[in-house]
Amino acid sequence: MPRALVTGGAGFIGRHVVHELLADGWQVTVLDDLSMGRAEHVPPAATLVIGDVRDPQQVAEAAQGADVILHLAAVVSVRASVQHFYRDAEVNLMGTLNVLRAAVKQGAERVIFASSMAVYADSPAPVPIDETYTTAPFSPYGIAKLAGEQYTLLLGRQLGFDGVVLRYFNTYGPGQTFTPYVGVITIFVHRLLAGQPPVIFGDGEQKRDFVHVRDVARATKLALQAPPGEVFNVGTGRATSVNQIARMLIERLAPHVQPEYAPPQPGELRYSIADINKARRLLGYEPAYRLEESLDEVIASCRAQVSRANAERASAG
Ligand SMILES: NC(=O)c1ccc[n+]([C@@H]2O[C@H](COP(=O)([O-])OP(=O)(O)OC[C@H]3O[C@@H](n4cnc5c(N)ncnc54)[C@H](O)[C@@H]3O)[C@@H](O)[C@H]2O)c1
Image (tube, rainbow, N blue to C red; front, top):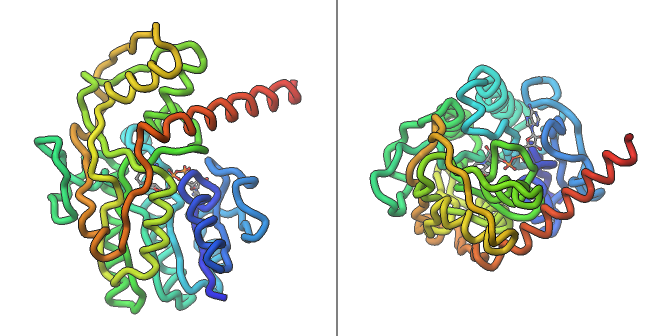
């Protein structure tokens, strides 16, 4: 049985990646510090190692015997990375170097690095950008991701493993960890469920490429067969504004509510839409989910999360 280490495998995207790998007969180890992920997200068929990517020893132990490492563990917040730039680099950059060092030491054949659309320069128009588009990050988070990409590709070439980089765009779907910073759809749904209006930063005409987490997980699995040394956008090629998201959710959850507007936030791109032709051509990737048809599933998952949290609070108090 081939063996995979998934860092961040108890998190939102990681848990879907783990499911894909198990379904294909991989033996899976998850390394996660559970700072955001949850142990119950890791299926019993996988081995959960609770540990920190900042600790080289823990990473090396978890990587023992791994043929492939899928590195998804990260502190995931463009916005928070501006204030907390040091912590961002400790986890997202130094943590990545620990993973790459373990890959070399343990003789892993391939490292797949979960990068982000945050590595790109802003785009002047709401059109899809391909992987050759200028990289000039707007945030510490984007800087660390871009450095992680370059380390993965360069060390892969020079130290003998296959490095592959995936630039995930705005990922949404059931089970997204709720924080006030990450995942505009999940944040808006939680506010609406709590009887509060969504807060839109800026004029709301910023456009994003929202890609379903199961599409992202499938693209990640397809990257196991990708030609080494390549970078792939993982999105849908479709643009949706934050105003449109707010409208769609308000319509479904609280038709009388008006969104609130707040000043734009530092570090955020105006337009971020993926050209996915390279992933189509070289990975055979095709997104299967459409946003409009997937929102009800996200709402149901957020409702379940809220009831679970209430039940946990009630039993604790
Ligand atoms: N969600 C998105 O829209 C998006 C977009 C672009 C890129 N990404 C990237 O995809 C990956 C997965 O993101 P996600 O959305 O699933 O977020 P997430 O927060 O749900 O998952 C990250 C996981 O990493 C774990 N983790 C954090 N710090 C750690 C540490 N020091 N040691 C070990 N584990 C640690 C967390 O507990 C969590 O389970 C990340 O690398 C992120 O940067 C996500």
